[in-house]
Length: 315
Ligand code: CP
Ligand code: NVA
Image (cartoon, rainbow, N blue to C red):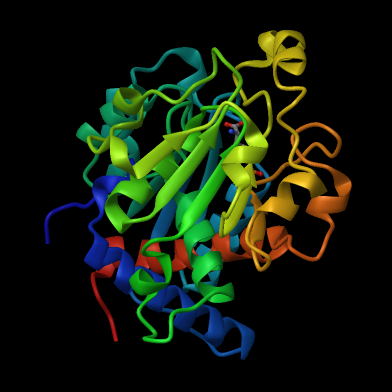
């Protein structure tokens, strides 16, 4: 099998997502039943995790997930490797990928991830870049399907036609939602402050019909199946903190916004969250919020993803 990377959401097709979402449910059920599921035990497989930005969920979900699959991990950061001392990314890719079976990278520019992948002998996974966060959206879709399954049992039927309201920054999460909507046939209602809009070119989508823009965040939430948001200031943009705090003041998901969404609408947030900024405490800690399932599902979804990238379809 040729190497498959997961650098952005559209690197996989709809049929592959149908498989992964079903597989993630199977893997999660085994985990919950305390049953071993160790396709990476023999031969032992290793994941290198490279972090150039901070992380809690991504680190824990990949590391715990890899051990649960019977494999092991190597954890590198810019500060404690030669990556922070200007070793070319191409050289790092050539070396690291001779010693491990898969690499997960969290970094700044998508182009850096792409350069690594171009020189890697093994699959490379995007653990967040300035432009995209595909593992998060994979987990979010898994969570949506889990909470609102289709009668057919096909996860793609559960997603088709859904309305996802995106309230906040036109950032890596928003871009990835647009790619998912285009591929899996749902619509994103996007509301951002002016100056922070999504850019379809940067998002890598070609069908402008997969999203609608709303000036008013509450209007974006009307009739939504899922309301979701993210921090006002993403990692790497901290210098803009004060300007953003003023610009985003009206983009706080509150109970009034949830009230105009569908009565059974869910609320998601990739976390970490700032209560009183992008979301009120009443919403994130309220009955429609599924943020803890969403965070846990990072691990189950990524286990399915890693298994697929290394071993193909199983079961
Ligand atoms: N959602 C997410 O990626 O969280 P971390 O930054 O903690 O990894
Ligand atoms: N958009 C956020 C997501 C954090 C998980 C960031 O890039 O910092």
